[in-house]
Image 1 (cartoon, rainbow, N blue to C red):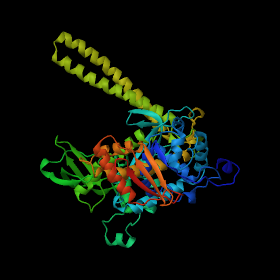
Image 2: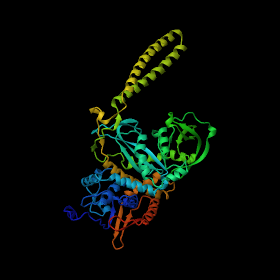
Image 3: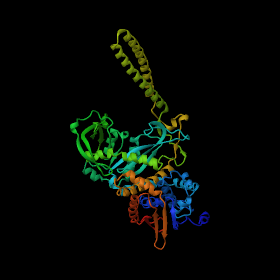
Image 4: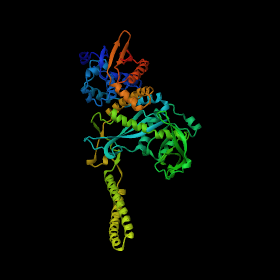
Length: 560
């Protein structure tokens, strides 16, 4: 078959299964129904085409997603596993070699991967309308440790450092499941990305939005609601989105004084996992915006914690109750959990290749000269503040002590006062210089030593789409398993699924019956085997057909 493929006699090798015992990673085949339901092979032929060869498009896509689920975090790592065992999962003699897989990936990423991802996103939204009323928006900073180009520096909150990095903006559903992302080598900030990239995409993709007639009949009705952190706080943005009938909510950046305790009342808030929590909530109307053109009345809802701390939320959604606004805002950690989990288990931040691409010369970036001046001013202003605090301390001591010692402190205070006055003059000169320096310039205007290129995004975007499919499939399986766990704990369910993917299995084809039985080996505990039996029954009921074989998948446990 390989010879026929090499001489161009066949377009692809057919998947043919023989009875196999103790196949490594055989448990990952239990994820195939969920992967296919999430669209792994849907529309593939519409957006991609591979030249005739031994491995088909389905073989390549299944290999890459199986690798992601089994936590094989790079293509090179596949070389340290048994290729024949992986081949048995594909119905072939072996899986693609690293060199072959790299070549196929390069071929695929030159095609319309973005169109494929957009098509899948639109279908995910149509299949899950309940989670589209509220969407989470957040930026994820990917640190670049290479030396091929000098990317702009970004503040990385998890490391508390300014590092060379690129930013991805992710759109997740109310349950935390990812829909799509936008990559930006030069981050203009969430506000600009929302208006220029995310909102136009959502207006086209979100199904079942109210019609213009429905919006006109109900002045308070919104198309959908966006939830984000303080980076998106902008009265001007809220007003512009309000004109588009898109609700926004975030934490209040300038909440002011605490409200009286008697304004707060206990309310039941529905959390994302389906449980209820009692929260002390209060509400007022708040006028935002210092400029007349940006002024807008919004709802301000505050939660009072047990310690007495008040957390302020602002929202332009007028038809939801305070509890319905508080729930999504305090559920933002679901998106943060996705970032953490995807980094740890799916190697979300890993580069797929090291290619670089030029940036448009008209792209605005921070002026290096302005940044350097700003850093000097901030540093010297901090030192000036410490001098003033020390002067205040010396002055107090001089008044409290005897005349001899007071003279000594007053002399030191006078010396420090002169130093503060000199520094104030120099600081004012630096600030004047900063005002005269443009904060932003174009890439073409950058000095030669500060010129940079951006990381190629095609291969990363393609692999991230596969990782989104893998994550969504794993989540679907974890939700089935959670129903059978005593504590319904998501982390425990995901740990169970991860162990299941790496379990051995027997593959038993029956060509006469047209079935392929995946018989998973016994797990570590009787309880785990009991859950496995229930999971196998649910997956078998889907009557999934293994791609390009016509064989219906049947899942069983050896312990049955």
